[in-house]
Length: 446
Image (cartoon, rainbow, N blue to C red):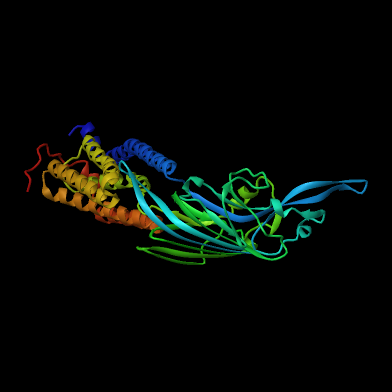
């Protein structure tokens, strides 16, 4: 055996070559990752297009009483009367909604949308403008209005009527007596002088997509939502105090006191009022339980480990036998293992992640184990590689499905794999391997 052949046969050389090839496999994984990002972006674009044709995320704010009043301005040397607007929030607020979710499909992409009935009932106390502004002279109730904010008013499916005290009126687009930065719906106040409490009640027939939220503007706010969507993701400044989630849907209740509202009961109606209140929203997002692009991305993060483990398994078989496995053959195995992620991505868009994972892993395990068995010339080596890959892909699937325990599971698996490698080669005479003759013709398949 020549010095060059002895060097190539050297375990140290093979380990270096395997390390280099493992690092080289990052390139196809990055290509698949870029393709995954492109497909994920396309799915997001489709969701935006569907929202544009249907309605987007919905946030409801209100009711808020906008009350103009006349006040004094100036010092003791000279005063003048000015006109201001006071925004009064309700003492109590009850909001309840029954939301029905359905899937809209465009091509191979699905987007959850909803349609629901939102009932709102608010109670306002007697209003005294001098408590909020000592310079106030008198309120102008004839110009007062109740306003609501709906983030995407295209989702309102019919005309909205609001009952204010004993009178009813239709909500109309407009900001009422104040200039606000966002478009609102408003109704004039009739027959109210602020000396006695009054109620405001309405119902919205509303549709939207991806998320629904409300703002607890009341001094005491009670919110209740019910839906047939079994995978809610609650968000906002306040999470529900009670929730029940099942395959048939969910119910959730919020109870929010004014301490968490960070807004006074009566305040100046500046243009950014509704924008500030919108940041206090609480609601639910229609979470997609199986985001195939997110799962494929997580699988790609473990790609180098899976490929490296397969290389080490083949290397161990090579060390324990008298047959050589050329670096080019390692490259072939690595290419097949990298294609697994391309198959996974392409299949998952059509049949779901679980079925795609089974199809892709079965195809790759079959190809790689057959190839290794043919190279070594024995069925046993092929079956051993198939067992190793089956265990690797099985553990990877477990890691992907248990995100909370992914790190500890991965760490334990890597430690166990290293322990198996060390114990399997504990009696191997590494120095004697270099002197072994290399078989030029593989034996027949057993």
